[in-house]
Image (cartoon, rainbow, N blue to C red):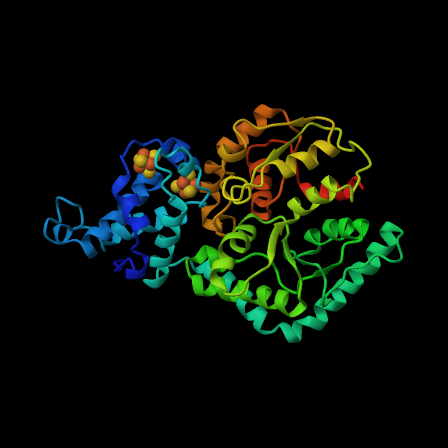
Length: 412
Ligand code: SF4
Ligand code: SF4
């Protein structure tokens, strides 16, 4: 089916034009992309993804692209075949920016892919599942008054349970506390509340739990307005409660959205933003939190979530924490900034028809874990955990997948 894809005028800026112009077609990015190295399909090659966008730009904004349509390959733009390639290029990408690290010009493919997704959305060709998940989060936010009571009761029950489990009758999971220092934004489900709550109680932190979930599917859809709506609820909550720091649970894209995008979306945003991993590392450095020792016996490694490490600079903190609790910490090769993406980001873990592709794209990750000899893989992102669990089953790796914070909470 045909569709007209357009680059909105406001997206044309010096950076975009520079990137479109400077690419030397050297191909260094192709070997860095976990999709391209396993599929060898042109729409998975980072430079080709950009070439599709370049054709639209030429057809839309240059006289040469309008006249010499065959020469500049602008004649096929708008065809069903072009649309299929464009969709593949935009949605079969995790936005990991590994290609950017290997590109001699540092061309930001994540920005291109974000623009491509937004163009598809505007043309009515976005991803329905991601869009539905974003809409669900928005309507949940609109019904918050009705949901607040149920949430408070769930948290009271959890608090009661943890008082028994920890033997600490004063154990607290505060909600809606004005003047708290920290607003902790968890994910759906108690698994991302419990370890953080244990650590906060241990150090006597003045914290409060957000009513909202950290994940932001609007960011994946390419519809920035939806992404803003989802984030705005947390910004308003932080303002209302007067907190100083917004702490994001182990979730890579939520961290990226809050750390790098939200401050540019809302005026007067003057909160510090931290990942829970950074905060817990601070507690250790400041001597506020002590672990009981190296409680993890089996060999363990760390998978760097792309949005936290490569795109967020959080590389040392999780390693410092894991080395405190583990007897045999092993590094993956490569790791940190050059770590292989697991293949689950960019919203891909939520799209069932991409399962086989995800498994293929995660092969490099599975192989580097196997080479390390680790039996446990810790990471600090929910999407990575889901993908690593799938890879574990698919490649029969026999691993345990866990969070960094979970291990610290077990060791205090
Ligand atoms: S951002 Fe990641 S997934 Fe997307 S093209 Fe680059 S290396 Fe591939
Ligand atoms: S590495 Fe950079 S310059 Fe080379 S083809 Fe890829 S995007 Fe273009």
